[in-house]
Length: 273
Image (cartoon, rainbow, N blue to C red; front, side, top):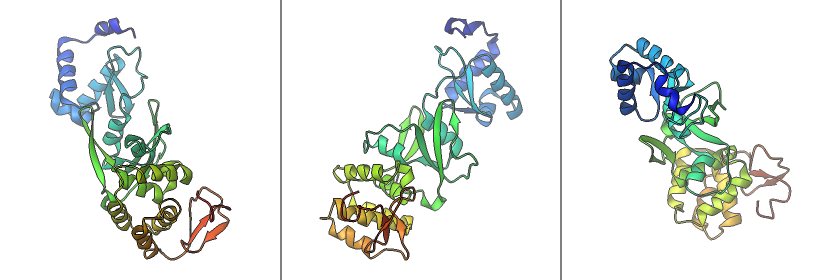
């Protein structure tokens, strides 16, 4: 649809007033339940109106019951999401942005990742949805594990994102959230070299998360990259869980570092990952 033809799409005065009120009363995303009280109709009527406005090119449907306003210059409904973080907050709350997406936010990496990591208390069937060109990686987290978060504004929407220390701990818990242990180590080094480094907080988060593999991976990486952090290394040693873990479940691991009860790829025991 041409930008200058949108006023010819058949919107009457009442529709224009309702649509204007809806734009003012929402924060980047629109659901049936949000729309109903704003425009003064039932949820079922609101659903019909949103669908109609979508057909006329004023809204774009992300998923059933969730819409975003279309920019005036949009030539059609299939435009990229203006801010995928807002969509994540609407669809998957309680949740937070984590893993490599949080690492990008805190400038812990210069890598470009194509999907957005969302840590959610929900258990969605589709763990890798693609919504209007924006890809997501969804991971379930327990309600009591929603700690170490910061609130940031994305437009008019508040979004939770893991703080730098929690970001590192999450990626040590599940290296896939950082693109694998090699990438995670690079982010860990950047964290350790930055003003965001907080060893007390890092250890506290590891304690609270309660994943024994975190101490094995954290202790190993500290010993290889920051041996002067003797206090943190000792804490990791005294909190090792029973059994052996892999430095990265996605990598071959032929060598056991018995001190850390950690399987690593051949050659990593003597060298740095």
